[in-house]
Amino acid sequence: MAEKKKVAVVAIGGNSLIKSKQLQTVQDQYKAAQETSTHLVDMIEAGWDIAVGHGNGPQVGFILRRSEIAHKAEGMHEVPLDVCGADSQGAIGYSLQQTIHNELKKRGIDKTAATVITQVRVDANDPAFQAPAKPIGTFMEEDEAMQKKEELGWNVVEDAGRGWRRVVASPIPVEIMELEAIKALIDSGTITITVGGGGIPVIESEGGVIGTAAVIDKDFASAFLANEINADLLLISTAVEKVSLNFGKPDQVDLDQITVAEAKKYLDEGTHFAKGSMEPKIRAIVKFLEQGGAEAIVTNPENIGRALKGETGTRIVP
Image (spheres, rainbow, N blue to C red):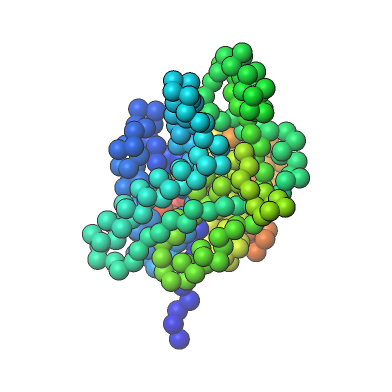
């Protein structure tokens, strides 16, 4: 009997695509993707089939900025946020497809990679829409922010004395619109790049689904996808080798393995995981495991191979 294929959803963070503030050009991002792709192909070589989710925060920021500048300088139409998300999925997917293809070819592996421009349905009544809190785009003077609020209906806030910014909702995913296509690709052995940036948020309307100005957390979307396809593993690739308690403090403790119950205890204590970075990752993993997932790993890209062998990384189990 043929051995059952092992399927993993790998969520790669911004550091897998942008190494630093000095390395942000398209060429720099391509080089970073190239490096990440070698680690992804290591997983393929180790017998895994993978779906790859990725962040897109900085890239969407760049697309929005270009749109704002073109609007100011030339009166060009501004690009809606959901379309910026789609643009970034295509461009990031392109760099990953190409670098994965080249790496597979180099190793003589007969596989292919494909990107699915993915819409993720969210609930129009999600409480997040009542309290938009996710900052996007560039800093503005107060008068410009108020003008955008008036003309375009933006929600704007003053951001820690640094200027005004647009904020949008971060709702939770309820349906992956292209799920059947994603499953078919994974079943065929295709390395599938999907739910980019958490997916393009869409809501149900009378005429079908329509895009909405929101940002879905990419780790929540990847965890949701992992449950939907019954993945054997959720691997969140981030900037650190292991999850730590008291991160960056003298009494920092690196974690090798924890259970869901321990993860929830640490989340409840509220002091261990940074709000904008590690906390959502741990929450996404807890959700994945509580919904039937078998195991999750958190590590940095260069340690993916070792983490899969149990040599490093943090493993979270039911």
